[in-house]
Length: 264
Image (cartoon, rainbow, N blue to C red; front, side, top):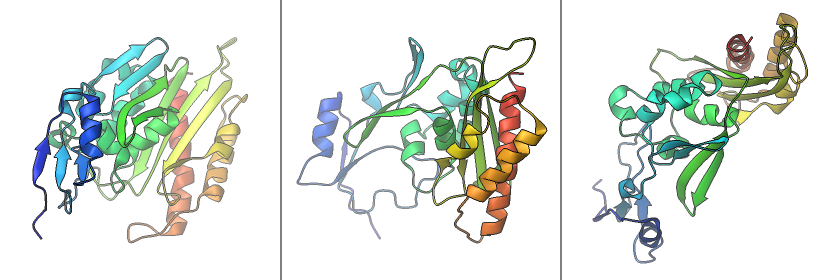
């Protein structure tokens, strides 16, 4: 079926973009590529609004905060030296997994976050980094998270092929207290999992089990068991509920172990 798309706009500032998106006489949407573009992305849309002139494609430091513009291409995130220094570069790893090289150059951070049917790793990494989204109406302006010091990150996933969308994926970020006599105490842990619930989410009950504790194989197994028990997956042709529950625990264990090994 042919698209109704009739107009293309490239505003020079945010205010103009908002006016175009809020017009009552036509349906306009931002031109924001996702990692898994649909075949007919703009069906029943009258106009698209190109945000490329709004300077929303930056990665920068602002005091103790890392700021990323909503239009930042995933390839720039994957290549960023600043982001590689945060929690073991787990967000860079997630960006590389989101799409192939050619698509990463046009897929934006906003497209990866707002996609309802796409690779979950970028969203999981942002959840584990406790990132905050800054929006202006329907537009994603910026994503921010606190600089990660004394922290490590880990990402684990299972998929039918290395480039296929993950069946279950887990991202962990672990922060530790300043070590005393070589002993690291967990200060905070954040664990986000996709494929083990109706949508990607943090497993806060498992996170709390690591706080104030020293790392051990027994503790890791208890956390994995708690994740499996807390999982409420939706089965599909790629994986049964039982498989997803089991893999949620296994991948949580792997991601946490990777994160911890980076800082011990």
